[in-house]
Length: 174
Image 1: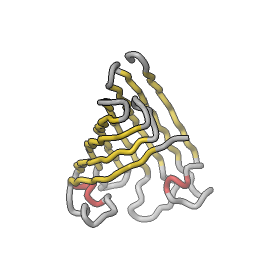
Image 2: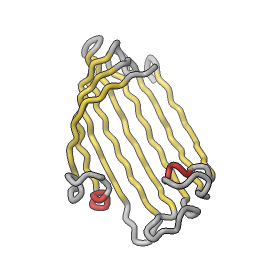
Image 3: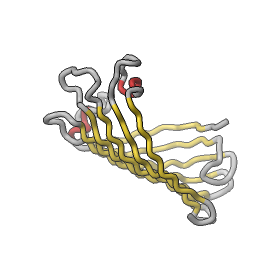
């Protein structure tokens, strides 16, 4: 992976104790979940670095509340990469491309898909991908299928299948 980098393959398994992930009362959820993910970081030398992830999750929520319309589980595929190019010791440009697909296990339910692209100029206290604190402005364009149109909890997006979001983020680690 160039000068520096890593590749981490992770397997996670949860049994019964994932109540809070589903908004359940602790101790009442009898579901299971597993996830396989690959997270990597590549230093391509000079001024370009990137981090990426691909993950696959299966959740069995058949032990959860049997309310009408509650899925018995889901399958979730997610992938993304964020390259960062440093122009100076403190200024860099990050971009991010991501994709998510969720298949609920519910009769008649449809697959939800979302693809997004973000561009983010940023100022950091130092050089490199991991330099913090960082202040960034961002613009994100997201595109989702018709099934996904009901998911944004914002009236501006409820009937649409794409949209923009803008903002400023501050990130610090200690």
